[in-house]
Image 1 (cartoon, rainbow, N blue to C red):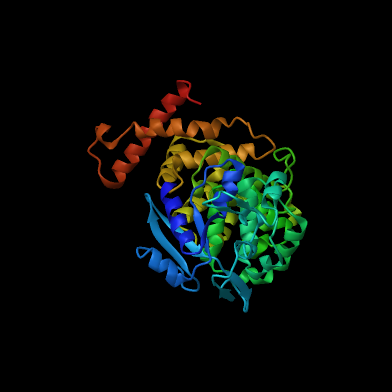
Image 2: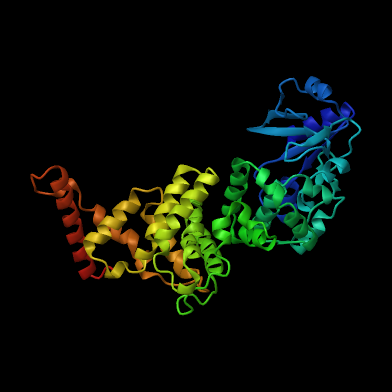
Amino acid sequence: MNEIYAIARKIADAGGRLYLVGGAVRDAYMGRAATDSDYCVTGLRAETFQELFPDAFVAGAAFAVFRMTVGDAVTEFALARMERKVGQGHKGFEVVSTPEVTIEQDLYRRDLTVNAMAVDVLTEEMFDPYGGRQDIDQGVIRAVSAAFSEDPLRVYRAARFAAQLNFTIADDTLLMMRKLREELTSLSPERVFVELKRALASDKPSLFFRWLQRAGVLDVHFKEVAALEGVEQPLKWHPEGDAFEHTMQVLDAAAALTTREEVRFAALVHDVGKARTPRHKWPAHHGHEVAGVPLVKHLCARLRLPTHWTQAALFATEQHMKIHVLDKMKCTKVVDLLTDAHRTPLGVDGFSIIGMADDRGRNNPNAHSPNAESMPDYWRVIQSVSGKSLNTGATGKEFGEALREARATALHQARKGGLP
């Protein structure tokens, strides 16, 4: 912090001011640990900043953003700027960055009031011209101005911050999100993925999808999830309501059990096949796990998701129903299932979480899931039988079958001994 203060002093001596801005200010006000710190410089030209700090390097092509090492971290310093929309998409902006741009003008171009606050590094004075503190106190995500509509990515950012902070979204902001529906198609899959990834990492990721659904834009990039709304399920097994509500509860249950994003994503898509069930067959959804596989493939390919996310999601989608009948399966089939799970990025532990979350996503966040919970124990028994322990001269396929049978026998004995 002393090093930042020295930088601020040097900037002030040259006629400028240094402000801490954005998420670090928001998190400090909320008493949360900030993950990074960004700074805004007013009153200086880019050439002057470069002269003051010759070790800084330019990181922005369209406007002056500098990076330099402060302490153990590379820190970003952006010169204050204003933006004017001149074309479509997130690149269609004209940027003005001069010494005359004030901190209030710089904050005005930002998307949400909770991110449009600044603190003067030297005086520690808070600048909150657009009511960010009040919105934080009230738990509201609100656009700073109508300029929110100039970048469609802000639709996903608003929903993502609602999930991260467990806030609601103001009605007027929700309306702006809805009006940006057509422009959302201009976003690259890479930009959508960044917001999806951050949303899934939140404590309650379902809020991201719920708010997009309320804004009427969920189906633009997540049509397979949006299609679950209104899809009836058997009331006996699903008192929570339709398949969309079940999916949202399963996602939050998975988030409570693991921080692994590929597992959370698998929980999100595990039931998308229910949207393919003909209406006259509702509320039953026989075969929805198989029907969901091509849907998941299309979603992952369209958003260019990481391979390990795709593989985890495909396995969970196709195989999750077997968890609920694990206690009735033959030991050889259990060995096959868990061996297959182990070979995927989901792993046995991740597959177990899918089962537990599936049970909890039925208005029962504390549900006990004997089958799902037993899977890691089953897997330890299976792994305890190695190829080296077999007294057989078999090789190749015969050896594999002998190992499978030996593992099934061990599992059978463990079950007889009281393993669930």
